[in-house]
Length: 224
Ligand code: SAM
Image (cartoon, rainbow, N blue to C red; front, side, top):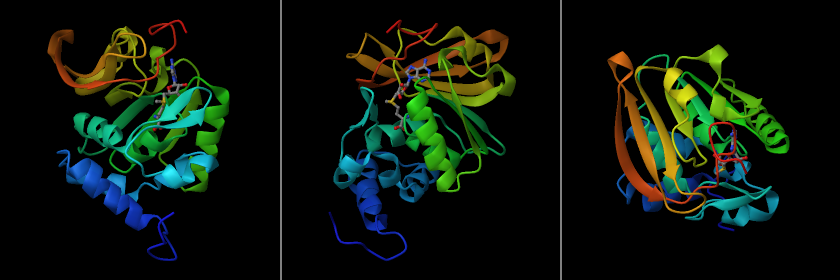
């Protein structure tokens, strides 16, 4: 492991290097996103056995056949969500251990995040609470149905991939809001899509980047 850069935040230098070499170097430019990536303690969202790899340029296993996403993909998807207005509410589906939710919470006013596996949801809740993230709510369940009580959202992000964007998310999005989600075949061969909601329930769709994500499992996703 690299030597600590200072006593209070031993991973700060590693995060700064990660942002410069993996994220800025690949073209992410939004200063809010870069700052959120520098601030969020990625090492706190990996399993103990992966600590040495926490800032590596790759996804890492978190147990239960799931992963924490590659830092670049987290930054890319955060930028793609086009946040930055006042008082924004965001829904993330696929909490994992909570890293993406923490990144989003540095930009949005409030983040709602849903994880279907109870062990991961509970661990994410504990980690986020212990780090003092007070503007994130974690729920356990099938996020493909969205979160009706908290809708409408300015942005909805999925960190698992489905065959298509779930209909309930389209309904739960504000006019002008964005959905960012990996869409495509099961396990491999997907692309990140951004859907922007216009008036009259019309959506503009853009394909942004080829990716490989774990499946979004649920009523409006895959069945396993
Ligand atoms: N966002 C995480 C992070 O920041 O590290 C990465 C999450 S991992 C790539 C995808 C997660 O989506 C898994 O934890 C998986 O259990 C979860 N998931 C899959 N289908 C889901 C669903 N229908 N609702 C909620 N979570 C789901």
